[in-house]
Amino acid sequence: MIKINEISIKFKEGMTILDAIIEGKKSINQNTIIMVNNSIVEKDVLDKLQIDDNSEIKILRITDGG
Image 1: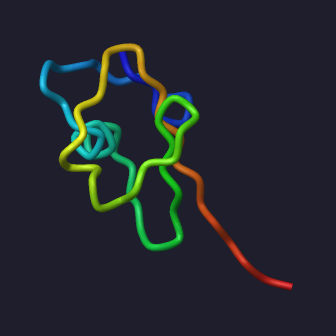
Image 2: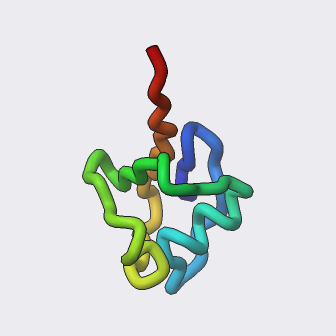
């Protein structure tokens, strides 16, 4: 199982970080930070890096305002 913001999805062999995000029905944009197992991952490699079973993905939304 993989956790995405505390929601569990089923791990599949060969799954990339982007595959997991899509499977978890999450969206990302330019104001999003992706962390895998507490390490920040650049968005341009999400479709290249495979994820391990029992990993945890956090999708953090950056907001600004005053």
